[in-house]
Image (cartoon, rainbow, N blue to C red; front, side, top):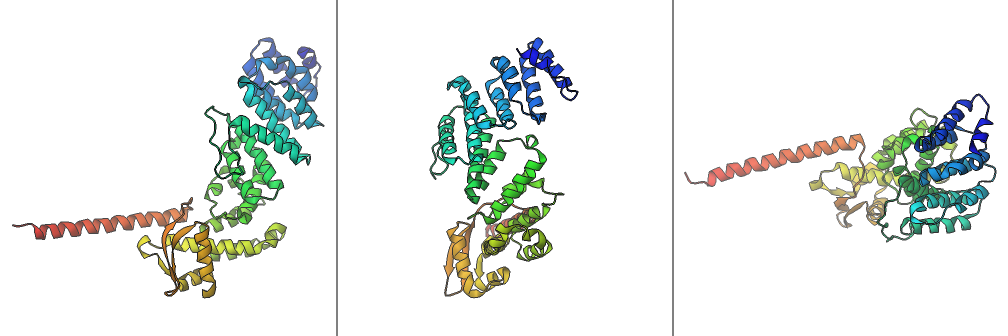
Length: 386
């Protein structure tokens, strides 16, 4: 009996919320009640399993199915045995179109708990089932199947990519963790993520960006509000370090490493892979050099690249070949002339300093076009009979 359970809650902290719930239920204001319950569950730090069985089960038929599943998922994080709890909640749903998103949400929440309990095989099976229900292709296959035509709620996709990101992190796959986490953030309103969680995720993403294979452009992460949450925190050094990488400023990188050497010492993964960081910043520095060079002057001598990246001439050809292999640039190496001709630079999100460079290039191009037009006008006037 829901009212008897509510009346039994007499603590001063819970009394205002319980009064609201009791009033909304008696007035049959189901949408408002669902919103109030969600707020109550989100604010509580107690075990809410009894609240779910004594109250939610009595009103669940009046709630939006996805909202109900989201509330149950939040409650699962407060109970002693979340796996058993979610299995019971999941049994209450039938796999039908009207509640498929809700059933998928609970399936993903259960997969997440299996991951955290060290049961990856069971988690993988539930993730596979969820992927089929969502109509998504296998993320491990390059040519993934297209998404089904039905609309999938952001709440479901948010949890789907959160689970994939956790799975990748447990498997030490930095690249997939980075990609899935950005997908998760694209489906999750920033204001719904607690500040401390934002900072933890941002820091983990920073580590993944620095160590992830083939990750050389971080602009999308740098402009995201979650990553900006590192500003003013003890982990602001990560924001500064990644910003330097994105700009490809080798000298500033060395200054930043020296400035935050104590913080870097506290991160074994970065210390053990410092050679990866050196290789990345040199490639980033080379790409920054290409970007800053006018398009009609991109025949760059090895000696210029060596001076910019602080590498020997013997190491430049390998650096250029790796950049070509990664698809960061396209062009040809002239081993005889000891230079590289760059025809293409991969698109990337630009820092403000790079945007300013682009503005200057556009202005210079406009001036050149104006000069050409003026020249044509003069030549046309000379060729026109009087």
